[in-house]
Image (cartoon, rainbow, N blue to C red):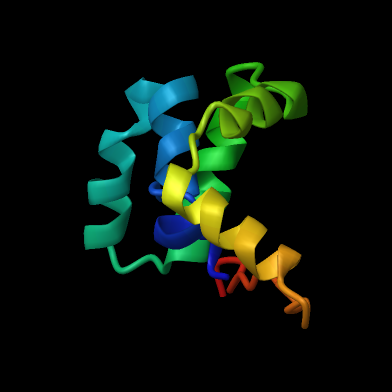
Amino acid sequence: WDFDETLIDENSDTFVVEKLACELSPNFNTLNSSGSNWTEIMNLQFEKMNELGIKKKDFEKCLKSISIHPRTIQLIKLLADTKNKHLQIIVSDANT
């Protein structure tokens, strides 16, 4: 499984910024047009969020609020419940 846009129907990076510090959302366009790569952009966004006092528990709560499509949940359960259980792995590029 890929996490963003597959397992969850969101981009988790932009989701947490929009929900926890929406005033930082315009930075995505500014930083992207400056030639920064996504990892650099998110590092800057997270630094700003830290300065605003946003904590790990806030991120956790925010991420837990993202729903997973019911059919995705059904598929995960089906793959786990089959006679020849399938190994399921979440793969992430971790912004590299």
